[in-house]
Length: 159
Image 1 (cartoon, one colour):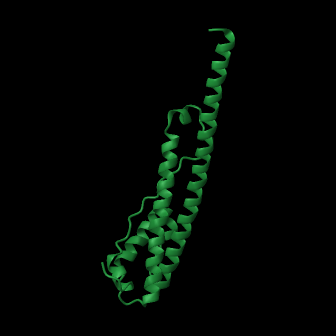
Image 2 (tube, rainbow, N blue to C red):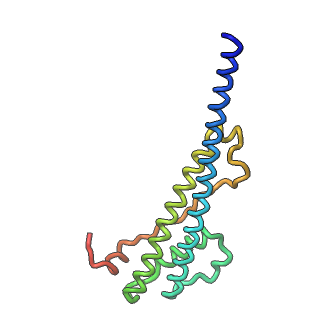
Image 3 (cartoon, helix red, strand yellow):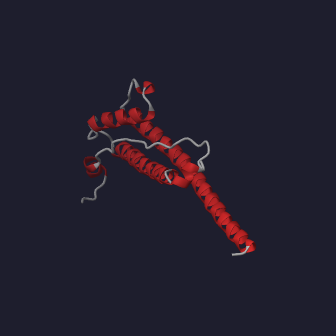
């Protein structure tokens, strides 16, 4: 093989490696943006649920001392014990909507975190530190509330 052919092969391999690195770095950047947006949506949903819970009279006195996950789980436990049968239908519907929004927002957030962690676990991304200084995203662990009885109360549709 001539020196020219060897140089062409080396340049092509280097160009391919550069394209792969840039593509992965861009994808990782988009995933981090997606995680940040999903986290903001989750925080908004949690705030809406706290507002709906306060409206029906469920409050946590020590919620300011808890981290967001512990506070969300404590509120979920308090709402699970709360008797919704005496609530007006529109207020109960607002509470159910807020709880459903939290469940969906948590799933969206955790899906974005899963995708980001999956890409960050690749050898090339780790070796070349393509994630830069972005913090490692974390799952938001929260027990999903049981809605069966609430749906029967709010919706006239039956399973």
